[in-house]
Image (cartoon, rainbow, N blue to C red; front, side, top):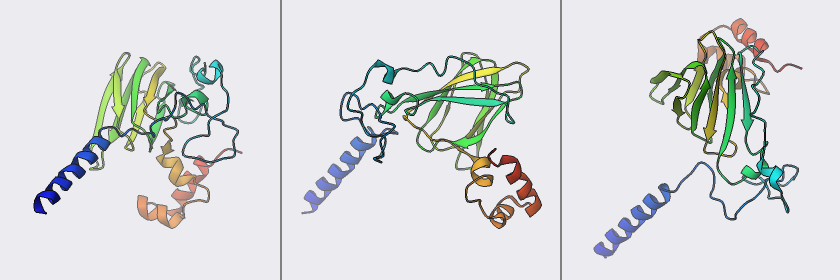
Length: 219
């Protein structure tokens, strides 16, 4: 019995090792294609498959032009995910283009469903992520360089140069999701209670209300 128990234990460990070696950010696909039906009211983990599709479902030129960086952060993320390219449904990949004005910032944020790798098209950026041990891992990257932001960790990109910059971001998810730290905490609906934010950030109520007013969605 003891030998059988040890054998069973070894088999369980082997199975978990095999599974963990094949885990990806998105579920595995079960057919050649499953083009997303973005109009369907049915909710599943992903999107319902369309009954028919064509080449247009696998194409987009959304990344061809620089994004408009004339905003408070001086940056613009243009996504080519499943919501823009329905053919990405179940394929577990997507990309984005990020443009930065001189001094522009892609503020601290996370992608809960994907690891991100950026490739610098133009310019120079200071980038970094923070580990769960509160350690900052940062580097200056230039045209032609790549940098990886591990899944779920807070990260940022800042253009400290005097010229515009741009990157292409690759994700191992069809829809990686983005949570901007400041916007999530100070512009949620309903709002996060002031007494939570004052205690968390060790600031006064007036300061909290000021930040909320600046980050509130524009009507």
